[in-house]
Length: 280
Image (tube, rainbow, N blue to C red; front, side):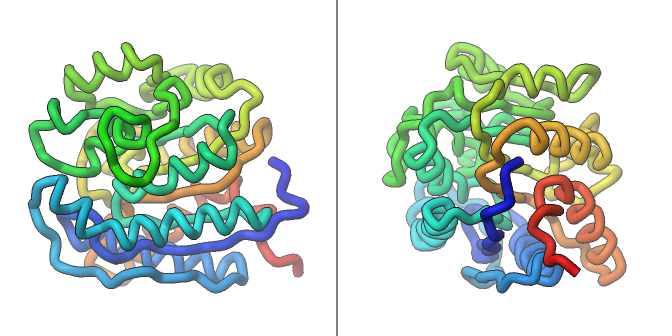
């Protein structure tokens, strides 16, 4: 990963997007402040954790537009400024704004989407009305978001996906997206899918097995933290990583458990941030 001339920039979206739990909003702020300490750069904190709701995606999107725009601006400023932007998110619908920026500035990039879910339902197929579940279709033009929709679906590489609705899975395959479930050969399949393209890395923490990391949505059979770290190390060594998003870190209630989760998160993403640590 070519980092020699870049500096990190860190931000958190800790206000509500379409969060149905307060833990992710709190977790975004915790992780951003930890990165501030680790990397020696100030973390910009946008929004305030607020009451979660179970609302329709249309209402959630309109309420969240200002914060999604803040996230998009952070990514654009970072990429245009030759930085390595890092964004900590309560939940992944914020990527409705960030993915179009990545595509506009790096049209050949691949989006490496580590997630237990596909997030590839549409407004017509969703049964939950949840904005996060229709994120990638919005970012690739299946419906109008107001943030840009030019990313081709075959530029998405979904890693660790194991909880896909049948219509969602069918649409993903028709669209040409790559799906790499947990299991043997994951790294080799991932490297084949991304080739030599620059990559944007999104980590939804429920890609990890729920026995190893706190997330709102519990989906058994995920990656071990060490497996996720190994995958990040492999692609970080072979491809230009444009930046990083981390979402769905559900902050535990106890202080000790929160610190343990932060430590795990930092260890997992270490291969992508190690070059940006201040030199002793």
